[in-house]
Image 1 (cartoon, one colour):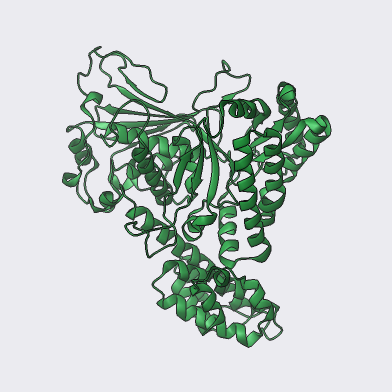
Image 2 (cartoon, helix red, strand yellow; image 1 turned 90 degrees about the horizontal axis):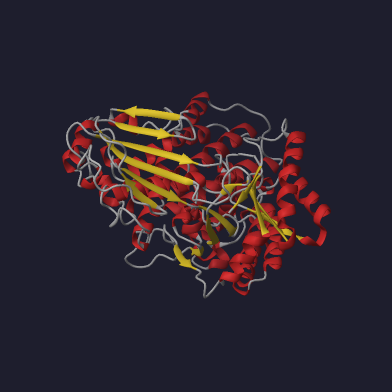
Length: 591
């Protein structure tokens, strides 16, 4: 049997976690060719999509990195035009067959590597979508194909007694509905904090990794309210807001206040057109919340009929989003938090949550999280499960869970789609520790906004290949995670800062060197020069540095550090703005 197939199919973890590079360095040209043939045959017949994905990435790496190093491989060469055409059209299976039929050369090896890699990510996306669809609370939406089958109804409180002033406005921290002036409908309002992570154990929450290696998928996640320093009354508030109301037109009106975008949608087809405008996130929320069930796509039915079924004929829905003071690409999971907030307000409005006001129940939060994942994959953004952590309050430990009997994932993947959330209450992380952390941490947005998607792809690739340095880096990240959890329990903020920076310098940059940049390194170096021993450490938030970041200082120097960082970030930005992707002026947050 092929040695690489033994690695892929092994139940023994030591065998399963062997590095592809270690085998390929010793293998001859003919052995690599033989392994490629066995891997290609295996990925065509395997019913296990996770094993199929790993076989595809083994093939990609062999053709991209290992065969070209062998002198037997013919240099140069031509690739079949039909294969290239199929590759551009995302017909990866057809492209691979055409490339395999051509004489093997450096050119065809490169073409095969690209086709196998793209097919691997396509297969992975299909498996995650399948898991998302099978999650509890999501299945029914894929069975709805006609407006008459829609079981949801907008709550009568949101359109009853239009034009009256009865039931004047109520005030609630996280969700409230209030009557606007006469002849307008009540407004349902959801306000949600964002999340920051003490550690994500080397991006361990991305879906393939979390479902294939649940014991290594662990995140320390904190929900926070924000206010831009010096630009508000100083009282941090939940920065992500969503609004829902009924309107007297049979349309779906979507509005993003911070993006300045609005769309009035009158057809079902337009709801599923995510690329048409900047409102793809709101469309994904409408679909993932069940208002426009995903199963109705392509049915040719009327949106007005669907809305009439949910409210009354001639009426529609307005959904509005607003993010205050945080740009896209902030590393604070704003897009996923906004998606979860929109889904939550839609669920409240349609009776899928027990109450219009107050906190969601634990089960309702899990449904919102599952649907936020669905919305991300419907829109093609991917992401991980910790990003919806803002809908859970406070400090929490989020962990992957092995799939067991009764779980939809059982027999398909080692881990479940949704993790386990454990709130670390005041008996675990004392109020004094929380206060000391708040008094030491300077939270900033460095002004950079970058697409973290390519980084998540590289993390997935390095995990699948079990690249040696990166795999050891992942084990080190898990050890640092244990230390951070212990330090949080005992309240040692200085050592927390030392370990968050150690995590950034060691495992994070071992796995993905691109996680840092000159801008971030300059800020860290200048902070250490300016504050010496009173600078306790750097804290990377999310997928990469440069956007949302944390700097830990001795509490007595925090106010000085806030002013210093605000000035220094502006100076460094001006020096680098022609070379680095800045989206906004750097800011310091109160939180």
